[in-house]
Length: 577
Image (cartoon, rainbow, N blue to C red; front, side):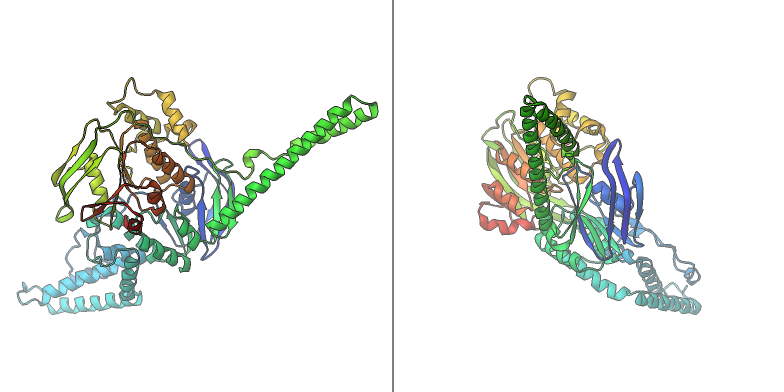
């Protein structure tokens, strides 16, 4: 059970949550919702224990698991060392050497089985050397007896801990998360970023703690894996507290919603799934507004009546004063409108272009790219003309992000070339926000972006204009001096979109621009792109988003085939991730 009492959470001088109490019972599935920037990720990290509340107390279950939004390249250790245990010291095993962390050991570590499995492999290797025909003669009978005894003890320990059944369970989890066929002996460092994220999610689920905290768990999942995760979370025994922009997940897997209000800094609980929450919240908004309007109308009538009575008889004048006192009390009892249920604000965005490009925006000519021995793009050729909208579609690992990076000029292809056209000003939105600088403040991030625009006429915008732009994207006051690296995933998305708006680009390359955004924010991005007069190349797994954009063409990877876009291709869009 998780229980928080009267907690207060601040980020620097900014109050995010005030006097909040909540309880999550064993096995309960709870979703946290709120606009981007409300503090959902900070709240989740506080409940999990990564951050401390500024006030209040939190009691947590004995075992918990957590998966955040941050890229996992640094979170997953590339190498580990299993030193021989005290019991094994007498069997003359060779000193353990650093070895690549395998998928098997990474997963088994979720239940503390990795050390036993690793030592079993070391004993097996020692037995093989001792019994090899070409052995060096150093394996004595006592050594062999000790090795066999140690291996028998380890195997019994592994068996009793459910080690052999665990590998079958691991295979099922990996298959459910679209990692079917992933070799258990494969080094984790050899996996792609998306594979590492899914592997980390699999380990959290495999560990089966009493409570699981998940922050945007569907960002690297294809449509099939999302549906599998919905079903798994709904039926697993662990309690779950999650943040997600995936409305289907919130509707399927959760039974209660915690709404974090960015204006009132209050946490409100709603029983039911996300759709039920929306209906309840909309009803509360309508009832609160209707009650406020009725009270204000009554106040107006009483004031008008009191004013009319004041000019009559003395008796009526005394009655007017009674009405005045009544109106005064009614005004005092009026609730603060900021604390009433209300529609939450979202950022405002438009995408002006500074100048028009030539007719041919760019041509990709026989581009090939490989990561080591793995080739992800092979002989890709196509061109894009001014004003066209192209969506890139492909299965996991087909090279969509790699191709966008090559077109953007941040990655050199192994072979081939990209030929830009005349007056082309490229704006690039990276899925993992690599274009952002974690050690800069938000203000300096935009200032640096403005200074990188050689085609802009006149001096770059000053601090006042940049802070106004930050305000449009819901970064207000002292947040301008917050470090980029401290932002949540949704906040980084908003900042990256602000950079694009600042740029005046006539060509945009967008890699999952709606990741980590709430529903209203996604609608604002869609509205801005719908009115964008430039050229657009996009990767997105959001079917409704792609359909609403009405692309002209689709590039199908890995084949490299360009087709006129039609709605039949929407069935392939969920596989973009």
